[in-house]
Image (cartoon, rainbow, N blue to C red):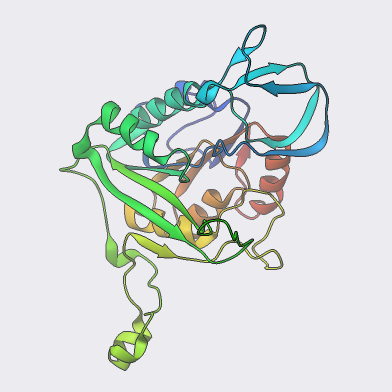
Length: 286
């Protein structure tokens, strides 16, 4: 068992390599595991400085990376995050396997990706865990940001949902925050006031650049998205795990819903944001 984790202990934020922390946690400890890894977009976001990064189609003398791209890297860096992963799936696959081990028998895994990798992830997870454990592909759709004139603008992300045991998983649709009807005039006033249960397509705005929820962390996810997953797939008192915690949205949602949480991140910017954001819940930072 991880030296910092006890089932009756405090909520935790663990700093450092998440694979090391994951391997130290006990089997079946978490009812919900939410994975929001870097999306392998090819984007590079600088916090302070980067020197000597060269990429090319040639691999001699360098490294063969994802999709055959050659990388020669000599760099000194301090980053908010670097979304250009060499050997992306070599990085992600062992973390997904550990997350699966950590799921309780009635637990649910949510893997949050985008259109670039979700196809590969679905094949991988089917092979690792079995197609019968696949529950849903959630489409999170939003309407904000730049508009391309050369293709249909990409305004959605994908969340793959797998259950540890298709005969035992916990799912409570009635516990989920309802959403407005898109055509409220077509239902009774009572139903319109109550709202409808979400489907596998979630229309939800991104975090507003000027809203109170915003922390300034570049990959922050909306609180409403995490609340919905945790409400449906866990009960009060259950443990929730987020190995790529970023701004700490999962921890805030879990605390609001009376769940326990373990968050992980190795990015100093993320850890600073979480210390401030989660101060009211008083997790232990290790």
